[in-house]
Image 1 (tube, helix red, strand yellow):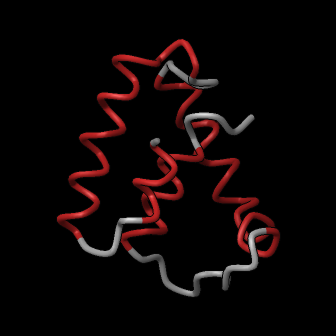
Image 2 (image 1 turned 60 degrees about the horizontal axis):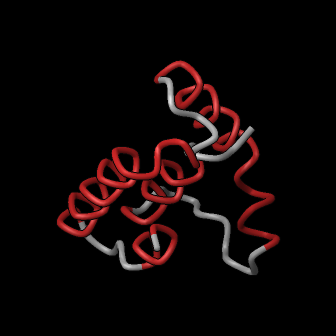
Length: 83
């Protein structure tokens, strides 16, 4: 499951692996993605970053003060489905 792969991201190498999984997920399950065009994906990414404090608060995680490799993975993953 792609969400589980996000939780594994701790380093640049992990993010590279996550990007591979993200790309493969789009190729095999793209019809399940909310945002499959680059335009929609980037708009969702922008909106999620603007609202991401709520996600971290709702999931009992600290709000990142500086983005980590996992934060980048969170953003990329969220943009697949965020409206």
